[in-house]
Image 1 (cartoon, one colour):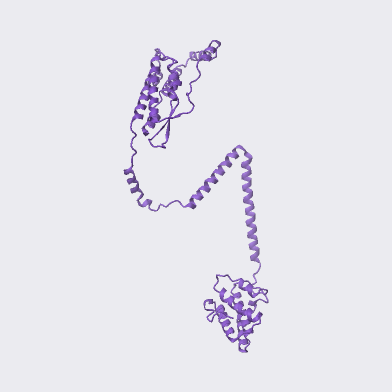
Image 2 (cartoon, one colour):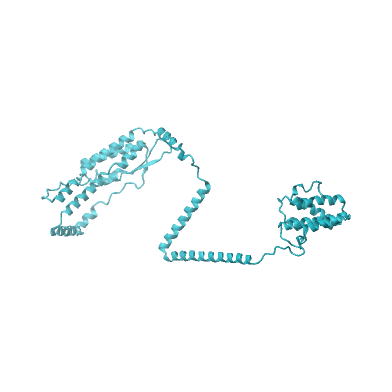
Amino acid sequence: MSSGLHDLNSLRPNPLDIHYHQRMHRKVGEYEGMRSPAAFAYLALAAGLALPRPHLAAQAAASPAPIQSSSSHPRDASIGDYRTHLIALNGLVQSCAKARDMKTCDPSLVGPDDEIPVSPAANAERRLVRYGWLRVLLSQARDKDAPPPKAKPAATSDQQSWENVRPVSPTTTQLLADAQKRLAADLAQAGAAPAPLPNHTQERAVMKQVLAGSEYSGLEEIDPKDSTLEKVGNWLNSVLLGMMKASARAPWLGRLLVWGFIAAVCVALVWGLLQLERRWRIRLVPEDRSPAPGAASAIPWQLWLEDARRAAAQGLWREAIHFLYWASISRLESKRLWPADRARTPREYLALVAPEDPRQPPLATLTRSFERVWYGGRPAAESDYQRAEQIASALIAGSPSASNPGGALQ
């Protein structure tokens, strides 16, 4: 089914709507000219006629109820069924225009609305075609056309200008004729071949040319982070909107939110001031940069190194390695590698050095050598002292990469 069918049924004015608006314009024009006391008498008479009367109650009860659709649900129809329905409706309107009675102009003969496919595809989208306008027209066609209005006395210039612009109300006979033309046009359009879809080749070429310009060269796809932030922002907006709607229904909720926000800001300010006061108080305490008594760095590493060389000159290799180890610890501690503490063991000193620190492997080698000869009671030789001195010298000099040229200490 072509898209023209949708445009035809949606854009064509409803004759019944035109008839209704024309009647309203005519009534307004008549009331505009009634500005004398007789107008009030006319309105009072019309109000009296509008009151219910006993002899008219039976007629109102006997009159038919408002006509509704014969089926509350539309039917799924093919294009062939739709064409058959249009042919039947056209014949119904022709018969009603000739007879103008209740039997021929029965709105229930229109049948249900149709849902027709918009394309020949298997799973094509379906479009609803309504016939409510035709049911209303048939219910009005039972009555004969109203006689033409009588000639009116001469009116003022304002009334004449209003009469000139007021549209002429069509009769029911004219509306039935318009309905036949509309059904015939729908039938002709239903039998026409569907129009091919345009390929928009020229439009695509123009769009590619526009997007190839320098002003669009820096365009990038949306970052997932930006999409997530946008979703969070939309969620917050929806929450705030819901809170505003709730506060409109419950005024106390809005006051609670305002005072809660003020309380949260006050608590945050108090907490921040306490943190600043604590930092200022810590700064007021003088920092003691001297090492603790008994710590390795309390004795300069130079003195530890002199004691090691003096013991090596006397052949005291165990004592010499002991002094070399503490000379290295004193040097590293003086560089603020760790805080000074006299109660720390050699393994605790080694644990304070990060594994990725280049000084950790040579310090571990020197620590194992020191523990073997000092705590393990193993004898030490001159070669052990020389290798330990190389490692200690590298640690003291700050070049641990060349600290173990002679291999691991035993």
